[in-house]
Length: 297
Image 1 (cartoon, helix red, strand yellow):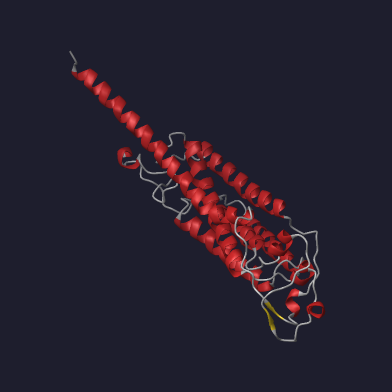
Image 2: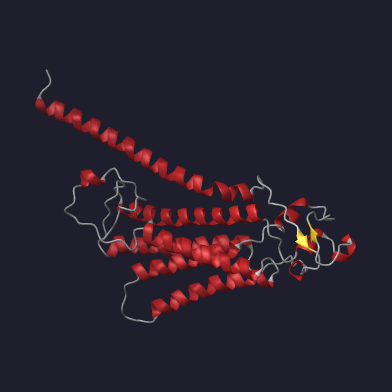
């Protein structure tokens, strides 16, 4: 015969099992969101979609620059540096806050270290996926020619015998590597500029929210200035490498900055008010760590 204690035990076990199932579903939903946000990025990087084949005006000097095989900031350095610098800083900052500042979390992830890292790094990576997907979508749909297009295409205005000022809808490229020609059609807008601005500006926002040491009032602004200088130099180097036009870089800066602002103030919890400890854990237990309603203090 069941007694009241047995019923209570079974009810508690069932409730715990249901809670764990919902936790897994919410984590899975976050991963699905990251995957969906990154689809346009991988579609471009894996060459699954070819860029729009835009023509040019005969005599246009903006696409006659030489091809420089060596880049000031290669793709590997950009991605590894941007993610490593920002990711490691966020990880160290959150671990410090949990260890020495008595921070707690209201998310369903019970380990406070894991919860804080999951929220901040998850928000940062989501912004990376969104920003680069927007960039690659623009590259594929616009198909603007890079400054070194004619050199990559291995043609000149004289070799195609076009009339000055006339529009050439199809470029008879003599380049054997089709991938190089496709890459030369992805000028707008600069992925280096957008990614560098996003990662560095997001880190500047993070330092503004988390770096509360008042011992040196100019230290935090100096670090933020240096981060923005790195982002600006990265974008400007794309002009000197003849990979992008100035307007491509400017648009990349704007897109990266807007994405960083959106993620920092509307998705991440870094600028949100502290949670009240008297709130019921039952009403909060089913929220995702990436939820905008989850806060720490």
